[in-house]
Length: 154
Image (tube, rainbow, N blue to C red; front, side):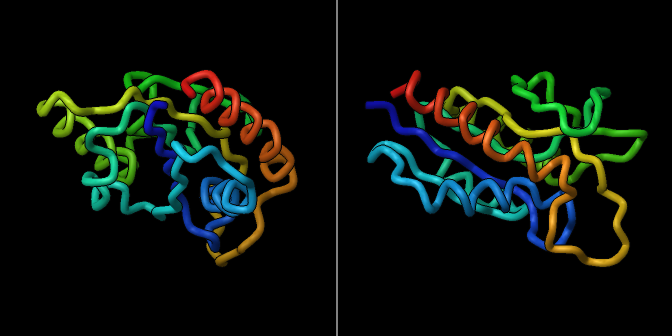
């Protein structure tokens, strides 16, 4: 069986930026196959390179600010992930891409897939633990997409 890591990013008090965190809470309540590990890592992905190195597959769950409408579910390859949006670098994604590039140099980088949603609210000044309703409603679909990937890679 392939070793699969589901890496969920985001913080609980950042409105839609916390999407990955909220997905991780649902996944942690599920009975995942033995070959699948789910971790919630905030934005500190680059600190977990030792957990990524040598895996067969990794699914990163996050928000992705593409040009699509808010609430659009996205499934991206590494080269499609927007690291800079409106001239501002998303440091979490930048560090993840850098970490994956470094692991690739060793030849042990997992097949990596990025799954998530286009956010509606990323500018909230006041900490809010809730996702917007449009984004929250996408969690079941994203979980289904993740589980399809897990079962297919099995």
